[in-house]
Length: 210
Image (cartoon, rainbow, N blue to C red; front, side, top):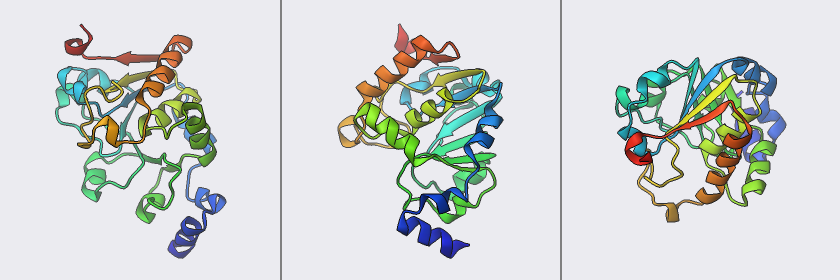
C-alpha cells in the first residue's frame, strides 16, 4: 500500500490518493447539525478567555501545529486537526484528534502515516483551486477550513483566533510579507460570509476589539 501511495503522490494521481480519504459526504455527515469551534492561530487569541466556550462545541477543529498555550484562552479539546504541512508525531499523539484533514493541494508533503490514519480526509484539489482563484492567492489552511464548513450542514460555526495576521501567528515567526497569502482578501471573504450566513460568528478578545 505504501508503494501505491508514493507512486500516486509522485504521479499526481488524485483518484488514487482519494482512495485513502473519507468521502466528502461521509465527512459532511459528521458535521450535520453540530456546533463547531474553528480555532485559528492568531497570537491575539491568547488575550481572551474563550477556552470554556471553545470546549462546549460539539467539534473543535485546530490548525497545523495546533498551539494550545492556555486552557483559559484556547480550551482543551482537539477533535479535528486541519493541516497543510506535517506536524510532529508527539503533537498528534497529545491532541489525539478523531479526524485529520489535509487541506493544501500540495500532495508531495503528505506523509503516508497521516493518510492511513482512521478518519483521514483529503481536501479535494478542485475545492482548494476554486478558493485560490476566488482570492487570487493561495488560501491559508484556516480559510480552506472555513470554506469547507460553509458548504457543510453544521448548525453553528464559531471562529476564534482569526485576525488575519494582524497579531501574527502562534505557529510560526514569519511576517505577513514572508507568506504567500492575501490577508485582506481573506478578511473580505470572511466578512462577506458573516454577513450572509447566520451560522457563522467571529469571536475577538475584548482587549483588541475595544
